[in-house]
Image 1: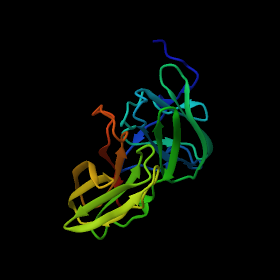
Image 2: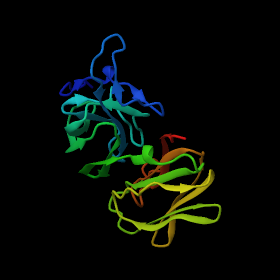
Image 3: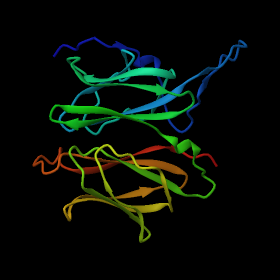
Image 4: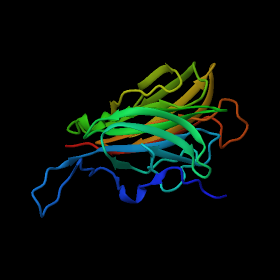
Length: 238
């Protein structure tokens, strides 16, 4: 299928930046003012959208399509300010969801495409993990509930016998980062007393993670059923 070039590709000029992300661009040979930037990581958590592109102010962020549960792999550097954020079918250019957001300089941010069956939205948040202290040796976790039509999902995260997270979660909720000892975390999502998905995650000291709760309740397709994934946001400063 021929690709629609509605969005201008600028992904080649963007760099995926991980724990060593630097929020300024500096010309070492000339005394010029530093240019502030922000960081953005994008996720496709829409089960029935297999090929998604993300564009900022009509400039394509992703050089390849994001499959379901895929993400950009790290933070991309973007210009700060108020930007339009468009999710679209990567191959046809058909719009999926659009929004506007003011990206502040020197911040990490995430955009999650969520929804199903013709109803979608971009959920955008500031990832404040860089403000967390690494001196305690803790790891940090948070979650996003990307399960469509979920108003009574019970989310549980247990480590060392302690309830790190134990709550009822609405669709699109993003929890705050919570500290815990490094090691294993047992994560479970339950509806009406029935466990829908569970997973044990290993977390490392001085790192922050986002747990992705996604899938369509009751879907017979294992690829689209409720499931638990996770990504590493970055390394904390000492």
